[in-house]
Image (cartoon, rainbow, N blue to C red; front, top):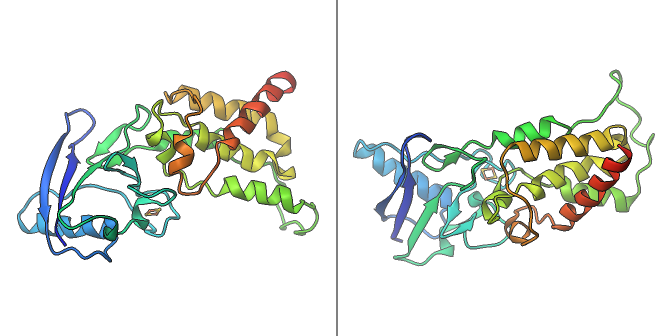
Length: 247
Ligand code: FES
C-alpha cells in the first residue's frame, strides 16, 4: 500500500511551520496509523533526515497521548476513536493524507505534531481530587451509591484528556473536558465537600488558559473517543449557577 503523507513540520513554537510531502510505500492496510508514521520515520533515519515528532504511549486508546488532526478531523475519519486506534485500511492506496497537530492557542506546538497540553493538567490541579482521611482504606460499602449515579459518574470519568474536543471546536473550547472532570466527582458523595470550589476553581482556570467559549456546536461530542455527551457541559453550567449562588 502506498500513500502520500503531507505532514506538518515545525522545529519549535518560535519558528514557522510548513507542510512537507512524503511518498511512503511498503505499508499494509493492517498497520495502525501510528505504525505507518513509525515506518516513515525509519525511512527518514536511513536518509539522515530528522524524524517526525509525535506522541504515543499505550497505543490502545487509553492514555490520550496520540491525538493529531488527519485530513481535517481530530483523530481521523472515524468518530469516537483515538489516532492509535485508526488503521491504514481506512484509506485507499494512493491517498494523500494531511497530518497536523492540534490547533489551539492553549496548546502551543512543541515540535512537529506534538503540542503542550499542560493547560489540561493545570485545570485538573484546581479540583480533580477529594478530601479523604489517611489511614486504612474504608469499607467499600460504607457509602452507598446508586447504580444510576455511579454509571453517570463513570460515563464522564471515561475522559482520557486527549484534547480532541478542543481541536474539533471552532472556538477551541475546553468545556467538554472540564465538565467531564467536574461532573465525575461532583455527583459522587465523596466529591461533595469540594463541590462548589471544585467547579468555580476549575472553570476559572479553564478561562485563564485561553480556551475559547462554548457555543454548543457539538463538534466535540462527535470526535470524543470516550463518547462524552455535551449534556455534561449543560450540567456543568447548571451547577455553576448553583455554585455561584450558594458556594
Ligand atoms: S497512544 Fe494512548 S490513546 Fe493513543
